[in-house]
Length: 435
Ligand SMILES: *Cc1c(COP(=O)(O)O)cnc(C)c1O
Image (tube, rainbow, N blue to C red):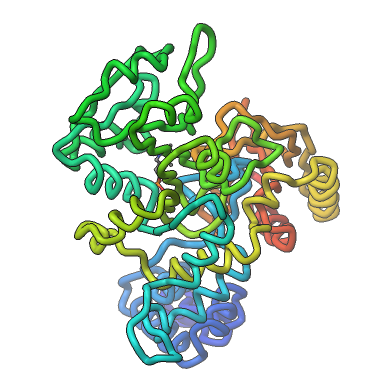
């Protein structure tokens, strides 16, 4: 140790009040309470005094100790509305409140009036049925893939599912619908070709072994050129049940997405069963929606596998709230007015300029993302920064994710809540000027 002690790293361990005044640590006090944060501070200070961490690392050690082992909230400035890697649809404030309210004991499976067991999640299911009156009955499982697995198992195990070769799709991360369906014990009977399939192709494949005809909406790619596919309306004339996997979860048509099938129209076209995701264009929690013929849905609901795919009470709470107020953040991001986005982005640029940070506002193109509507381009605007901002923004607190193009980092505010613009500004300003 030196005479005045300043070179001793132990003397450089930050003081408790300094740490508690640090904004993220102060924010943690609001969440976790002062005692818990102080205990974490003291532990980290001790670690630094023992030389296990550096004095500079104390703050991060405190924050790391306090952060739950859970996915971290991030700001999605990618311009991809439904980003699977970022958790797809963000819940609406009403859905978040419903999840919080449902986190304790609930009446999820109990009728309070009679004191008896009741149908699980009936409020959310009733809301779904009310939203799509064309459905005779509805059921909800864990996700869109689970909805397909349940339909295939209950209606076609040991039998055949007739499907066009143009609809044998991979849904992401190496998972393929044909493999998923085959895993249920149903056999896939492929008909037609990659680019063209006709009604006759389906008709020729039907027989006593047919469980159902499957129509899959290609929600993540487009084929163009010499193509033809058979619409649900024509398939419904074949005399066997048609199961339509519409993917995106649109319950009714959306003028912005004319090529995206919706549950109501698909049922009116004659589908016996529609399957869809809850966390794509519907803008709700991860869930698999099953809507259609009352007898078919009852069979699915009573199948033993249904118990393994049972949906959580938190999901039911979020789904009910989403259906009660369908103006979700996803819908808002999808329908955001480009000129309003431009104004927001220019305001952000000007605020940054006032603090000496130079950025540009450039036209950009946003997309719906893996959740549907391939090929739809949404006119947007972005804040353009040097690419060197990408890493510090992504690893900052909160992480801000943009899109890198042509050596620039583009921040598109379309999917950033309007009240978070200032958080983006602060995050950009925290990046050291030398990048
Ligand atoms: C997204 C999608 C699925 C899978 O749904 P998950 O909710 O992700 O399980 C299946 N089929 C289609 C057409 C899809 O778009």
